[in-house]
Image 1: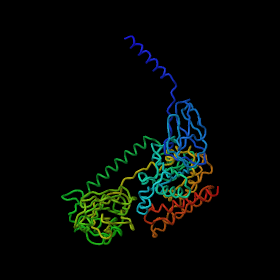
Image 2: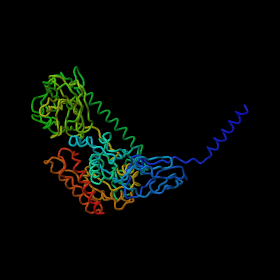
Image 3: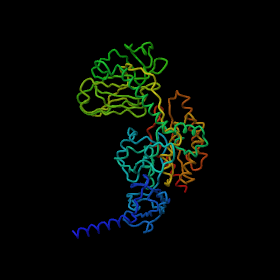
Image 4: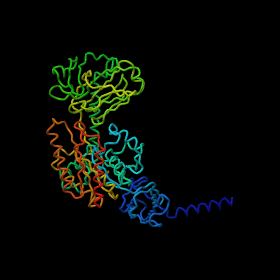
Length: 571
């Protein structure tokens, strides 16, 4: 018993002594400073984070052979009273990999190269997965550890600039990751890396549909009172919650009415059933949009308009649901394997069935409709494809000059263009409106740009402007302000900006729309000419009249690489 008491006494004394020792705090780094990152070559390496107030923070760097880079003792600083710390290391030679040891935190596989922020709206956001129609073989054949992406998570912040992004990580351009890369960023980085042999990192900070005002700090937007006042409308958290609640209720009621009023979803047989009798339906050419044959029982909106468009009653768009059916005949060989259904692009949304089996849905107009048809769904003989199209606002349509076909497992294709059977489902008033918080001034600068401002970069590739065409008269001042804003925030007065010109868009018959886009391109060119260090990347010739998201991001990426190379050659 005596020995036990002595043992317990010694154990408690040791434990208390250990507890009293000043333990080295575990430092916390921002998300962008993580294993696999690429740091900017020929620039001091900036590191920052948090620890306990007054805690020493030591950083050591080793190369791939575990040999110290720079001082063997490393670089040391002390966390301030607020727990924040920062320090700089000497520039690293391009290449790597390097290992950073920061107290008890280790960052592995760090490369030194060129880092670019790739920002803007949907044409910058457009992922590699969306351009595989044009570049499938090239994408499948490429894998590189020297091209990496840090995808900045989407977040909206109304009140203050944030210090960090949501959880994220650097990813190399391997087959496991590449489909989620920005397509423009991917082809640009791939091209530049091939030319220089230097690692290229892209920080993908973008959000579809966003105007330039979302990406400017509140301080710099003071010269634009309309934008500041718009922010003030929505900066109250409780108000935004109330708006979201009402929007949710509005959509729930609209969708409930759409479902309840759609005869194709009720009755003895659903309209997507393969053996449903559609012989009494009208006949339409889905791409031209014209009703080519027949009065349809129970469709009073169309019956009075001979030769009209299915999407209109002759005066106004018909919102709600529209049903389309088409039969194709297949042999046993054609039907035995899985297939892929291509339905171009559809405005606004759709649900699709093959032989009564649901094969996919898309909730908005821009993505290409590519639906997998599993083995066993197709059969020898007659096969039915049914599309239930939803139009919420404006006129519904099947976008012309897009692929409408069934890709069979044996390599054959069956065209789905031309005539389909058509019947109106549930006519509706236009869908309820929605406020997109990400479109509001300053909110993306706060959450997606400010967390990066301590990071040295080689430049910014900026592809945005589509959402500002309607206010193109003020875009020049706004974009000029944004460039100055970012340069100030990054403490780099000469930070290069590569401004991507808007691509050609809209049908030749839409003269007013095309003229507006042409004027916007002139505004972009004016900014590039007037702002030192800004360059315009020619892009108008790569557009597609029927798609706001042209696929050829490879040629465009090469042009960005040309501009970067030309600038580097002048150094």
